[in-house]
Amino acid sequence: MADPQAATLTQLRNIQARSGRSIAELLAAVGAAGLARHGERRSWLMQHFALGYGDANTVALFFGKPLPALDGPPGAPAAAAAAVPPVDPLEALYPGAKAALRPLHAAVLAVVDGFGPFEQAPKKGYVSLRRKKQFAMLGPATKDSVEIGLNARDLAPHPRLKLLPPGGMCQATTRITSSAEVDAMLAGWLRQAYDAAG
Image 1 (cartoon, rainbow, N blue to C red):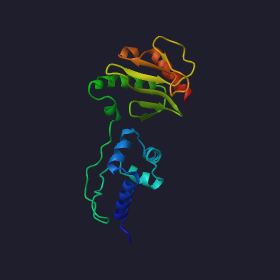
Image 2 (tube, one colour; image 1 turned 90 degrees about the horizontal axis):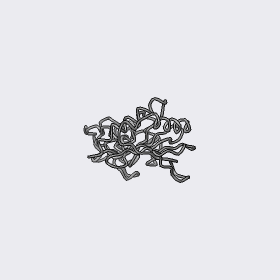
Image 3 (cartoon, one colour; image 1 turned 120 degrees about the horizontal axis):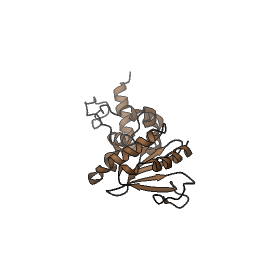
Image 4 (cartoon, one colour; image 1 turned 180 degrees about the vertical axis):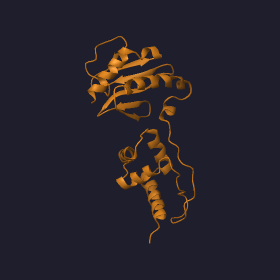
């Protein structure tokens, strides 16, 4: 009878060979995506790394758990390895001097949390906020400001809004430098974008 542990090790090695990435790298990437549920992690791995359902499921099962040693010969017993901790995607977005902007990021998210359910999808330079589609982008613009992209048509012109050309991911952006700017006006724009993505 086949050893299930050996079969899992072989599968993990094959995933590494096919994807060109280590299992630890795949787990770090899925951790940076900030997904909470196993099925979301599996789907994300399938979409972003073109893994099949079974391979993505196996990788997702190891999220936050000890990873077996994969450097021995096939069939070798798995050595205990350190668990890959979930990665905070905001650490990558707000390094160094930009770390002071995290409270602004959190304040904007607190407003959006009041609207209802939505998904956060961390990207390289921002976090995409989505329902059925993206309704806003949130991330550092400079070391002193956070930029919010708004995917809402028919936003009325306002001095705080920079309207963007048609065809982009967002129709307008605004920048904030203090929590005082997380006000009713900004909440209204975010709500309009949130409702339009429903």
